[in-house]
Image (cartoon, rainbow, N blue to C red; front, side, top):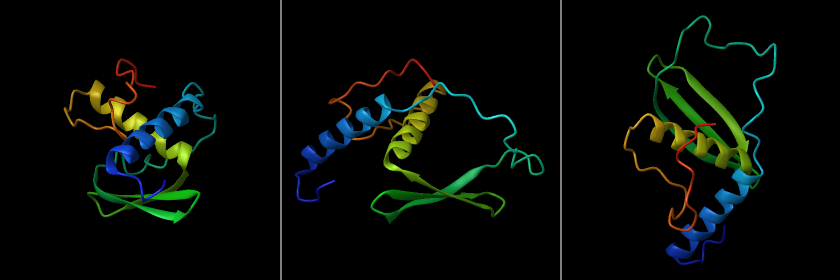
Length: 117
């Protein structure tokens, strides 16, 4: 995204990019058979911190730290970052956590807050 845009314009562009990425995302495909459960020995993991950093122009690294000192790291392309953000936002709304999360200016694109994909 261009860094010379005014903050309001950047927020509007981000909201439009987010909506476009969501429209081309597949939230209907289920997990593939044979996926390995990485928490089968540890049980659920509680994330207590994390960071987001660029890997290159196409990839963003998400790093999560757990309460037991484990680190979970993965890299996503722009479409998957937007899909991940959407899942976090819709899940927090459904859980009624009142976090007021949004990507870009929420007045540009109204998200459907009634479904968790």
